[in-house]
Length: 478
Ligand code: G3P
Image 1 (cartoon, rainbow, N blue to C red):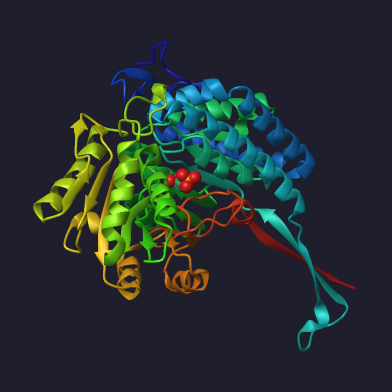
Image 2 (cartoon, rainbow, N blue to C red; image 1 turned 90 degrees about the vertical axis):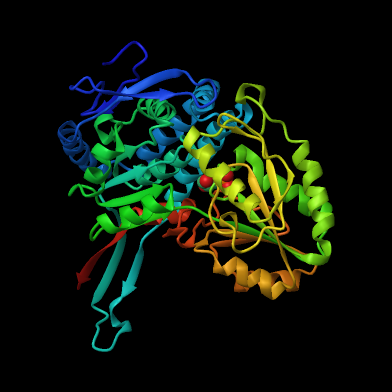
């Protein structure tokens, strides 16, 4: 039943609760208390709402791109004005440290502004008709970029505002309407983000916010005949499922990772240790782009492990309100999964350099050394603060282990020999390689992609804008 803690969702052009009065409870991961509820929508009410969202797209597409851009720029301004309030919601809902929660909102505002500017610059093309045998100069092909229609944007819990807006903004800017399915944990923050967009002047019917139980509405949305494209960030299992269910529509998937940091004997180990610790442990390791294994040459492994340990021991552990780097994980199950990986490694002979301490879902930052290929943590993605060190005898072994992973999101290579680092980068089966720096998505206008089990399609601002349009060709016959 809705209560005064129930946050209304946007359906059928209205802020409303479910007509069934069903709700989904949202608990704070760190306070372990109910912080609100969101409506649990039924398939029937979503269906009706999607109909109005599809109809609203026609008028939106016919607006000038300048007019659409004005609304989105205002959205960015309002988000910035509300950064404390929305940041507070993110912090409460996903236990992200306060500073990062607020900067997620400002990063989002910057992302939206760049999206608007970039969309202004994406023009179509004109083709000459006599360039192919049998063609004619009397034919001219006008190639425009037309919106796909209605985009299903499915966001993750770890960046409930940023990774949702980075799907919604390109979709709207290109003249599409949007069905937004927030992660349940993150839905309150996502709704606040869309409130800002409506306050900026977006017609309410243009977005349906599909809150509710994934088991009830997930497959229904993915298979809905009015959905023209799906953009999803989340786990690889769900990504595969979406890719199997969706039929004859484009999908962009940003999934899991097992990003390796390859450290060669000539690396600057102080810098390397600093980058690795930031890359592995920020937001308690709950980032698809986190460094999730270190592949280090044997001869420098002791020294590197010592330097990493010193920095890990300095990480603040505690509550997001206190701006701690390591905070409680999103839920107990997630903490259990990470703990199981640590226990399995210990049983099989890994050394705990530091950490392996737990208070409910708060896991202390853990560094494991002497991890070997028979241990699950060598291959599985922990969404938590544990980093395995795998010692290798030469760079060929590092490349082989890096590529043996089912994932292929990003990798780092640490070496003072740039030519050597580039030659290794060229052989790594990943979307991006960072030379002498931690893995990360930003700057956000760079192409962002994973290969193998890490994803499909490309994000990044220009690429995201192109992912929600198709070519529309009109041929003038003179
Ligand atoms: O986990 C999702 C991914 O987009 C992370 O981004 O900025 O933390 O590297 P970032």
